Picture 1 (cartoon, rainbow, N blue to C red):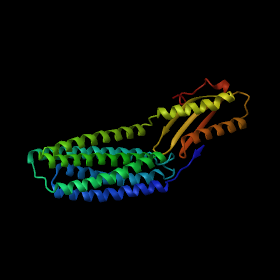
Picture 2 (cartoon, rainbow, N blue to C red; picture 1 turned 30 degrees about the vertical axis):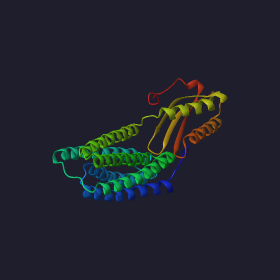
Picture 3 (cartoon, one colour; picture 1 turned 90 degrees about the vertical axis):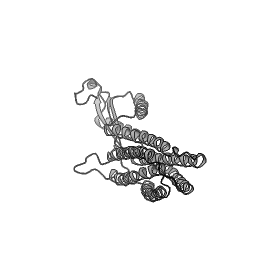
Picture 4 (cartoon, rainbow, N blue to C red; picture 1 turned 45 degrees about the vertical axis):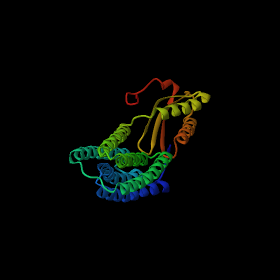
Length: 304
Protein backbone atom coordinates (compact mmCIF):
# COMPACT_ATOMS: atom_id res chain seq x y z
CA UNK A 1 0.00 0.00 0.00
CA UNK A 2 1.27 3.49 -0.80
CA UNK A 3 0.08 6.94 0.15
CA UNK A 4 1.46 9.80 -1.88
CA UNK A 5 2.22 13.36 -0.81
CA UNK A 6 3.06 16.50 -2.72
CA UNK A 7 4.94 19.69 -2.00
CA UNK A 8 2.54 21.74 0.10
CA UNK A 9 2.00 25.46 -0.17
CA UNK A 10 3.33 26.12 3.33
CA UNK A 11 6.59 24.26 2.60
CA UNK A 12 7.13 26.15 -0.67
CA UNK A 13 6.28 29.49 0.97
CA UNK A 14 8.51 29.10 4.01
CA UNK A 15 11.49 27.90 1.93
CA UNK A 16 11.15 30.81 -0.50
CA UNK A 17 10.94 33.18 2.46
CA UNK A 18 14.05 31.57 3.94
CA UNK A 19 16.05 32.23 0.77
CA UNK A 20 14.88 35.85 0.48
CA UNK A 21 15.62 36.57 4.14
CA UNK A 22 19.05 34.92 3.91
CA UNK A 23 20.06 37.20 1.02
CA UNK A 24 18.72 40.37 2.66
CA UNK A 25 20.38 39.62 6.01
CA UNK A 26 23.68 38.83 4.31
CA UNK A 27 23.69 42.36 2.85
CA UNK A 28 22.80 43.82 6.26
CA UNK A 29 25.55 41.90 8.08
CA UNK A 30 28.22 42.72 5.51
CA UNK A 31 27.30 46.38 5.83
CA UNK A 32 27.52 46.15 9.63
CA UNK A 33 30.92 44.42 9.43
CA UNK A 34 32.30 47.10 7.09
CA UNK A 35 30.95 49.93 9.25
CA UNK A 36 32.22 48.58 12.58
CA UNK A 37 35.28 46.52 11.67
CA UNK A 38 34.21 44.00 14.34
CA UNK A 39 35.58 40.47 14.14
CA UNK A 40 32.42 39.13 15.77
CA UNK A 41 30.17 40.85 13.22
CA UNK A 42 32.46 39.70 10.43
CA UNK A 43 32.07 36.14 11.74
CA UNK A 44 28.29 36.56 11.65
CA UNK A 45 28.47 37.79 8.05
CA UNK A 46 30.78 34.92 7.06
CA UNK A 47 28.28 32.42 8.44
CA UNK A 48 25.55 34.13 6.40
CA UNK A 49 27.50 33.61 3.15
CA UNK A 50 27.48 29.85 3.70
CA UNK A 51 23.86 30.11 4.83
CA UNK A 52 22.76 31.61 1.51
CA UNK A 53 24.51 28.81 -0.39
CA UNK A 54 22.98 26.17 1.87
CA UNK A 55 19.46 27.59 1.60
CA UNK A 56 19.69 27.75 -2.20
CA UNK A 57 20.75 24.09 -2.23
CA UNK A 58 17.97 23.21 0.23
CA UNK A 59 15.31 24.93 -1.91
CA UNK A 60 16.41 22.87 -4.91
CA UNK A 61 16.55 19.68 -2.83
CA UNK A 62 13.07 20.25 -1.39
CA UNK A 63 11.50 20.41 -4.85
CA UNK A 64 13.55 17.47 -6.12
CA UNK A 65 12.49 15.34 -3.14
CA UNK A 66 8.87 15.52 -4.33
CA UNK A 67 9.68 14.47 -7.88
CA UNK A 68 7.95 11.12 -8.50
CA UNK A 69 9.81 7.91 -9.25
CA UNK A 70 10.96 7.34 -12.81
CA UNK A 71 12.78 4.74 -14.91
CA UNK A 72 16.12 5.35 -13.21
CA UNK A 73 14.90 6.21 -9.69
CA UNK A 74 12.35 3.55 -8.77
CA UNK A 75 12.20 4.63 -5.13
CA UNK A 76 11.80 8.34 -5.85
CA UNK A 77 14.19 11.21 -5.18
CA UNK A 78 13.54 12.10 -1.55
CA UNK A 79 16.89 10.87 -0.19
CA UNK A 80 18.29 14.12 -1.54
CA UNK A 81 16.90 15.59 1.71
CA UNK A 82 19.70 13.92 3.67
CA UNK A 83 22.26 15.17 1.17
CA UNK A 84 20.87 18.67 1.67
CA UNK A 85 21.03 18.52 5.47
CA UNK A 86 24.58 17.16 5.29
CA UNK A 87 25.54 20.00 2.96
CA UNK A 88 24.06 22.53 5.40
CA UNK A 89 26.03 20.94 8.21
CA UNK A 90 29.24 21.10 6.19
CA UNK A 91 28.64 24.76 5.30
CA UNK A 92 28.01 25.65 8.95
CA UNK A 93 31.22 23.87 10.00
CA UNK A 94 33.20 25.63 7.25
CA UNK A 95 31.88 29.00 8.45
CA UNK A 96 32.92 28.13 12.00
CA UNK A 97 36.49 27.42 10.92
CA UNK A 98 36.59 30.68 8.98
CA UNK A 99 35.37 32.53 12.07
CA UNK A 100 38.11 31.00 14.23
CA UNK A 101 40.72 32.02 11.64
CA UNK A 102 39.49 35.61 11.53
CA UNK A 103 39.28 35.83 15.33
CA UNK A 104 42.92 34.73 15.53
CA UNK A 105 43.87 37.31 12.92
CA UNK A 106 42.10 40.03 14.92
CA UNK A 107 44.13 39.13 18.02
CA UNK A 108 47.31 40.14 16.23
CA UNK A 109 45.93 43.02 14.17
CA UNK A 110 43.88 44.61 16.96
CA UNK A 111 41.82 46.77 14.62
CA UNK A 112 39.59 49.53 15.93
CA UNK A 113 35.88 48.90 16.34
CA UNK A 114 33.72 51.83 15.28
CA UNK A 115 30.00 52.69 15.24
CA UNK A 116 29.14 50.06 17.85
CA UNK A 117 25.60 51.38 18.22
CA UNK A 118 24.82 50.87 14.53
CA UNK A 119 26.34 47.40 14.65
CA UNK A 120 24.16 46.47 17.62
CA UNK A 121 20.98 47.67 15.93
CA UNK A 122 21.66 45.82 12.67
CA UNK A 123 22.76 42.63 14.42
CA UNK A 124 19.76 42.69 16.77
CA UNK A 125 17.39 43.15 13.83
CA UNK A 126 18.97 40.19 12.03
CA UNK A 127 18.67 38.00 15.14
CA UNK A 128 14.98 38.85 15.60
CA UNK A 129 14.14 38.07 11.97
CA UNK A 130 16.05 34.78 12.06
CA UNK A 131 14.40 33.74 15.32
CA UNK A 132 10.97 34.12 13.73
CA UNK A 133 12.03 32.42 10.49
CA UNK A 134 13.87 29.53 12.17
CA UNK A 135 10.88 28.77 14.39
CA UNK A 136 8.59 28.76 11.34
CA UNK A 137 10.91 26.41 9.43
CA UNK A 138 11.07 23.94 12.33
CA UNK A 139 7.29 24.07 12.82
CA UNK A 140 6.51 23.37 9.16
CA UNK A 141 9.35 20.83 8.93
CA UNK A 142 7.97 18.88 11.88
CA UNK A 143 4.41 19.11 10.57
CA UNK A 144 5.39 17.90 7.10
CA UNK A 145 8.13 15.52 8.31
CA UNK A 146 10.67 17.30 6.10
CA UNK A 147 14.36 16.75 6.84
CA UNK A 148 15.21 19.64 4.48
CA UNK A 149 13.10 22.19 6.36
CA UNK A 150 14.22 20.95 9.77
CA UNK A 151 17.90 21.21 8.80
CA UNK A 152 17.35 24.68 7.38
CA UNK A 153 15.53 25.70 10.56
CA UNK A 154 18.41 24.52 12.75
CA UNK A 155 20.81 26.45 10.50
CA UNK A 156 18.77 29.64 10.85
CA UNK A 157 18.57 29.27 14.63
CA UNK A 158 22.33 28.68 14.75
CA UNK A 159 22.61 32.08 13.07
CA UNK A 160 20.54 33.53 15.93
CA UNK A 161 23.10 32.17 18.42
CA UNK A 162 25.90 33.75 16.41
CA UNK A 163 24.11 37.12 16.34
CA UNK A 164 23.45 36.84 20.07
CA UNK A 165 27.15 36.35 20.70
CA UNK A 166 27.93 39.36 18.55
CA UNK A 167 25.49 41.52 20.51
CA UNK A 168 26.97 40.37 23.81
CA UNK A 169 30.47 41.20 22.59
CA UNK A 170 29.48 44.68 21.40
CA UNK A 171 27.65 45.46 24.65
CA UNK A 172 30.66 44.40 26.73
CA UNK A 173 33.08 46.36 24.55
CA UNK A 174 30.95 49.47 24.87
CA UNK A 175 30.57 49.14 28.65
CA UNK A 176 34.08 47.96 29.57
CA UNK A 177 36.20 49.27 26.71
CA UNK A 178 38.01 45.91 26.58
CA UNK A 179 38.33 44.94 22.90
CA UNK A 180 39.26 41.31 23.58
CA UNK A 181 35.56 40.52 23.98
CA UNK A 182 35.31 40.69 20.18
CA UNK A 183 37.51 37.67 19.28
CA UNK A 184 36.41 35.78 22.41
CA UNK A 185 32.76 35.84 21.45
CA UNK A 186 33.64 35.11 17.83
CA UNK A 187 35.32 31.88 18.96
CA UNK A 188 32.37 31.01 21.23
CA UNK A 189 30.00 31.50 18.29
CA UNK A 190 32.23 29.27 16.16
CA UNK A 191 32.02 26.55 18.79
CA UNK A 192 28.24 26.64 18.71
CA UNK A 193 28.27 26.49 14.90
CA UNK A 194 30.63 23.51 14.90
CA UNK A 195 28.30 21.65 17.26
CA UNK A 196 25.26 22.39 15.08
CA UNK A 197 27.09 21.52 11.86
CA UNK A 198 28.37 18.26 13.28
CA UNK A 199 24.90 17.30 14.49
CA UNK A 200 23.36 17.92 11.07
CA UNK A 201 26.08 15.89 9.34
CA UNK A 202 25.58 13.05 11.83
CA UNK A 203 21.82 13.00 11.17
CA UNK A 204 22.44 13.15 7.44
CA UNK A 205 24.79 10.15 7.61
CA UNK A 206 22.24 8.22 9.67
CA UNK A 207 19.54 8.91 7.11
CA UNK A 208 21.71 7.89 4.17
CA UNK A 209 22.56 4.66 6.03
CA UNK A 210 18.84 3.94 6.68
CA UNK A 211 19.24 4.21 10.45
CA UNK A 212 16.03 3.05 12.13
CA UNK A 213 14.07 5.33 14.45
CA UNK A 214 13.49 3.32 17.66
CA UNK A 215 10.49 5.43 18.63
CA UNK A 216 8.82 4.70 15.28
CA UNK A 217 9.67 1.01 15.64
CA UNK A 218 7.89 0.83 18.99
CA UNK A 219 4.82 2.51 17.49
CA UNK A 220 4.84 0.05 14.59
CA UNK A 221 5.14 -2.98 16.87
CA UNK A 222 2.37 -1.71 19.14
CA UNK A 223 0.12 -1.25 16.11
CA UNK A 224 0.89 -4.68 14.63
CA UNK A 225 0.51 -6.40 18.00
CA UNK A 226 -2.89 -4.79 18.49
CA UNK A 227 -4.05 -5.83 15.03
CA UNK A 228 -2.61 -9.36 14.97
CA UNK A 229 -3.55 -10.67 18.41
CA UNK A 230 -7.38 -10.57 18.08
CA UNK A 231 -7.19 -12.37 14.70
CA UNK A 232 -4.76 -15.07 15.80
CA UNK A 233 -2.10 -13.81 13.41
CA UNK A 234 1.57 -13.11 13.94
CA UNK A 235 4.30 -11.20 12.15
CA UNK A 236 8.06 -11.09 11.84
CA UNK A 237 10.86 -9.51 9.78
CA UNK A 238 9.62 -6.00 10.48
CA UNK A 239 11.79 -3.45 8.71
CA UNK A 240 11.37 0.27 8.33
CA UNK A 241 13.33 3.29 7.23
CA UNK A 242 12.79 6.93 6.43
CA UNK A 243 14.16 8.19 3.13
CA UNK A 244 13.90 11.90 3.82
CA UNK A 245 10.20 12.30 3.08
CA UNK A 246 8.77 8.80 2.79
CA UNK A 247 8.41 6.07 5.41
CA UNK A 248 9.09 2.58 4.06
CA UNK A 249 7.71 -0.35 6.07
CA UNK A 250 7.68 -4.05 5.35
CA UNK A 251 6.79 -7.10 7.40
CA UNK A 252 5.76 -10.76 7.05
CA UNK A 253 2.22 -11.70 8.12
CA UNK A 254 1.60 -15.30 9.21
CA UNK A 255 -1.88 -16.81 8.64
CA UNK A 256 -3.44 -20.16 9.54
CA UNK A 257 -2.88 -22.68 6.74
CA UNK A 258 -6.60 -22.89 5.95
CA UNK A 259 -6.93 -19.14 5.25
CA UNK A 260 -7.80 -18.47 1.62
CA UNK A 261 -5.60 -16.19 -0.46
CA UNK A 262 -8.38 -13.66 -1.04
CA UNK A 263 -9.19 -13.45 2.67
CA UNK A 264 -5.53 -13.19 3.61
CA UNK A 265 -5.02 -10.43 1.07
CA UNK A 266 -7.99 -8.44 2.40
CA UNK A 267 -6.74 -8.74 5.99
CA UNK A 268 -3.22 -7.74 4.96
CA UNK A 269 -4.53 -4.73 3.04
CA UNK A 270 -6.50 -3.55 6.08
CA UNK A 271 -3.44 -3.96 8.28
CA UNK A 272 -1.28 -2.04 5.82
CA UNK A 273 -3.84 0.74 5.97
CA UNK A 274 -3.60 0.86 9.77
CA UNK A 275 0.18 1.18 9.56
CA UNK A 276 -0.07 3.83 6.84
CA UNK A 277 -2.52 5.87 8.95
CA UNK A 278 -0.08 5.69 11.88
CA UNK A 279 2.85 7.17 9.95
CA UNK A 280 1.19 9.95 7.97
CA UNK A 281 0.68 10.93 4.34
CA UNK A 282 4.02 9.87 2.81
CA UNK A 283 4.32 6.13 3.43
CA UNK A 284 4.86 2.86 1.57
CA UNK A 285 3.77 -0.33 3.35
CA UNK A 286 4.48 -3.81 1.98
CA UNK A 287 3.43 -7.06 3.64
CA UNK A 288 4.45 -10.60 2.73
CA UNK A 289 1.85 -13.34 3.33
CA UNK A 290 2.93 -16.69 4.82
CA UNK A 291 1.06 -19.83 5.95
CA UNK A 292 1.70 -20.96 9.53
CA UNK A 293 3.37 -24.16 8.34
CA UNK A 294 6.04 -22.12 6.51
CA UNK A 295 6.67 -19.61 9.29
CA UNK A 296 10.05 -21.00 10.27
CA UNK A 297 11.25 -21.38 6.69
CA UNK A 298 13.13 -18.27 5.68
CA UNK A 299 15.47 -17.70 2.79
CA UNK A 300 18.74 -15.99 3.51
CA UNK A 301 17.68 -12.88 1.59
CA UNK A 302 14.65 -12.48 3.87
CA UNK A 303 16.49 -12.47 7.18
CA UNK A 304 17.35 -9.10 8.64
